[in-house]
Amino acid sequence: MKIMSFNTQSCTNYITQEIDYEIMADAIKKCDADIVGLNEIHELSEMENYSFQTRKLSEKSGLPYYKFCHACTLEEGTFGNGFISKIPIVSAEVIGVPDPDPKTGNQYYETRALLKVKLENGYTILVIHFGLNKDEQLNAVNTVVNNLENEKCILMGDFNVEPDNEVLNPIREKMKDSSDLYTENLLSFPSDKPKKRIDYIFASKDVEFISADIPPIVAADHRPAVAEIRL
Image 1 (tube, rainbow, N blue to C red):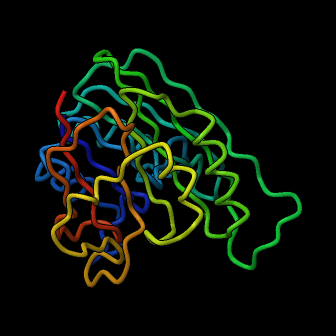
Image 2 (cartoon, rainbow, N blue to C red; image 1 turned 180 degrees about the vertical axis):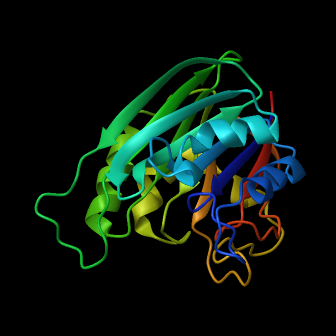
């Protein structure tokens, strides 16, 4: 099963800064993904370009099953994570990440949510987008860890932290990182000249990774993370 984690920045073409579904779908096709976790996706909006983005990517990329995860509402409309798949979805759950109270960071805050999907093949897929502040990130980690399955579980998304950040330790204790297969220090952000890796695909320890990569695709502001597992 080929897995792809992709922060689409609302399906914004990184070069033209225009909404561009074709370039996003082309990136997904190039990666030959069976399932895709999407970050920064809009759903309900009065602006056509921002409406039903998960469904549009599903249709254009040929992955017929999809689910949107509402995390918050921005000026453009409802916003969050998405999931598209060749494999039928059995169930899906949106799990809110608690907002820090009080907020102790000095960067932009945004309410986050975890998308938990169960597939017909028995796998559980978690899609997350961490915040920028450590208190947000710790709440996200706790939410993720409380929803992990011991077997046949995949976690992916934009974690907004680099690999050596201790915030990831509770996840690393329970899961393996696909980047262990990288033969070089592959980076994911920004997509044209990446300086850091903040996009990840993790799996429960029973899962066998066959390959993993961050292909040099410039579509959104992040490069996609890709991994293949043995079913």
